[in-house]
Length: 232
Image (tube, rainbow, N blue to C red):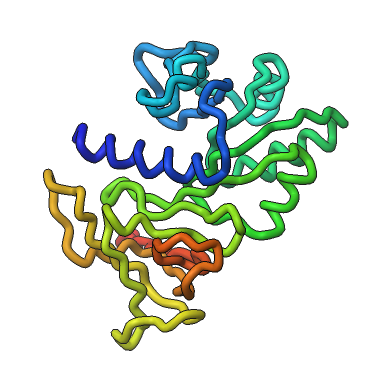
C-alpha cells in the first residue's frame, strides 16, 4: 500500500540521516525485478525526502540485467556517491575493484537482502571508503531495522513494528541470546500479521551506547532455510 511504502521510505531516510547521507548526490539502485518501463541508465528521479531542499538535486539511476563486472564499469562511468545493492554484491564488487586495481571512492552502500559481517563492513570501507548502511526488512512486514552508525547493531523501527526475539523453548531472549524473529508490523493494515515468525534468527541486544532510544538487535544470526521433498 502507499502507506506502507511511505513508512519504508521514512525509516530509510532516518537511517541515512544518522550516517550523514547527502541526498543531493547520485545513487545507483540495482534492481532485481525487471521493469516494463525502465532500462539501465534511466533516471528514476530524486531519492531523498521531498521536504529537504537538497533532495531536488539528487538523481536515482536505475540498473537491471547487468552482471557484477558490468555494474562495476557502470559505477565508474556514472560516478555515483552511493549505490544500493543486495549484501552479497558488496564482496563481489570489492573483488572486482582489487582485481582491476581501480579504486573508486563511494560515500555509502545501502545494503539489503542479507547479513553484513563486521569483516565485510571493514572491507567495503577499505576498498571503497564507504559506510555500509544495512537494512533489515521483509516483503510482508516492510522495514524492520537499520544499522547503527556506531557499528553496535541494528536499531529496530519500533514505531512501525513490534519485534520479539523468542528462544526455541518459547521464552524471550535476553541480551546476547539467540532466537527466532517474531514480528507484528503495526503499519500493515491491508493484510495484518500478529506475531509473524519470519524464519530469521537474531541475537537480542542491550541498550545502545549511541544514545538513541530505539531498541537494538545485536546481529542477524541466520535464517532457517526450508526445503521441500517431492515424491520423486
